Image (cartoon, rainbow, N blue to C red; front, top):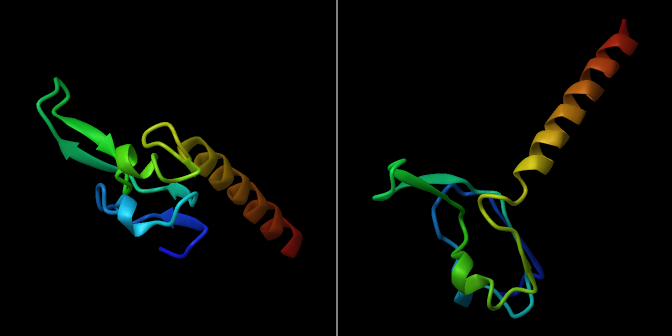
Length: 91
């Protein structure tokens, strides 16, 4: 309840509750978990944060799905390219 920025990556659906954060905290939800439901797919995707309640207290929050996933993929691709370039330079 003291952090200005909170990054979750637990893989535990809805773990972070509103009472666990301070007012106006920035919350970045990296967690992604399939949770069984009655939909046609049989599941829904949810993050580590109780989005509905935490979003009322946080100054900024990333949703799941639709949050940091594309940025994660872009950074993985960038790091793969950088690793290859570094390997070439060592030869």
